[in-house]
Length: 441
Image 1 (cartoon, rainbow, N blue to C red):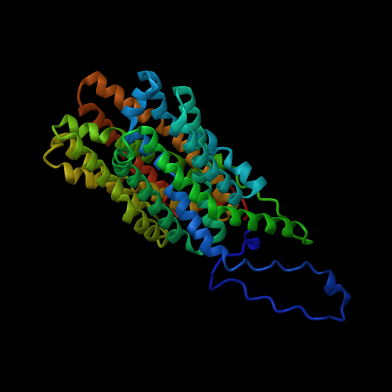
Image 2: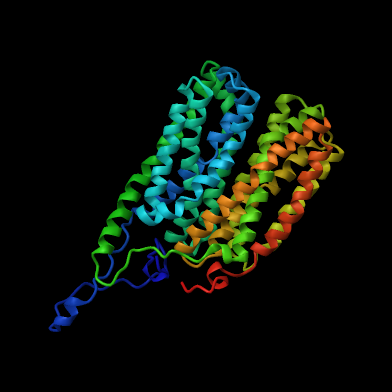
């Protein structure tokens, strides 16, 4: 939708209030387009709660399964090939279903699609523990991941649409919630499973409750957005058709963001999937290796709030991308030279490096002028990025199996940070996709 049609919430510099209507002797005044009604006072707080709850649910479906994967694999009789397929499904689903987000957003509105996405997450998590075969488990997981993919793409759009003057703050808030949900599921799933009797089914089912709670605030938000859309359609001179947005493939910045997103996602999935094994192969106990992974994930909680706020105040975010990449290079070098002796330091450094995710999400919101541009850019960057990330964990596993050690995989992981840093510098430049594509907002 055009920028001039966007009304923001709790914004001190918003347009002045419209005076109460008065009778006019001029009949033409009655034919002037009616002014839009102000947003209801409750919408801002409920939106913030909804954004936080949605972000909390964007990773537990993945990390809770990772914590119990051996038990799930045994319980469902999965072959090694099927188990490998399941580990690659998240990135594939994020890429495939993320592409549909712009069209669904234009037709139903971003709030309604996020509401449906959260419902899909909850439904898949409710069904998954009751399946009795790999095919059913995979289908339920795909439903959950489809909902996550839509929400992944549209949360930056929600922020741009309702909080355009607080992109950094709101992105930091939901990035912090996302990191918290990721680390909480990784750390708490096994203890909760033991407390519930030791069944992996009970351990996975718990996370459906959190997803169901996340649906609730989006129901009134989606209803309010739908009423506003109907009201806007009835106002003369007001168009509710969303701008189709610029042709993203012509934008160098869009491609830089997509490739940067893909490389940071590659590093994150490799870390989540293989870091405990790296430590265990170096002589670290299994329990300590799990704690080290939790430390890496927890680092994202405070930094996911700090980095977007900092990035939102800067015209060029390239320096942050370089800094995060250098932390990763030092971390991988340490794992190569002394994995056990400096294990805590390497876990901390890689935790900082993995905060490239909140940075790239913030840059997506800053590199487009309008919500229509953000939805196109978000879908393009995330879909292409997740496709790029799919081979990484598989290649690391193949190199590990082929070489019998971690020297080659760690060399690859460090080497990938070099183009990631370069792409972060390109994506961080102060420009928008509309300007690059010759569009007018």
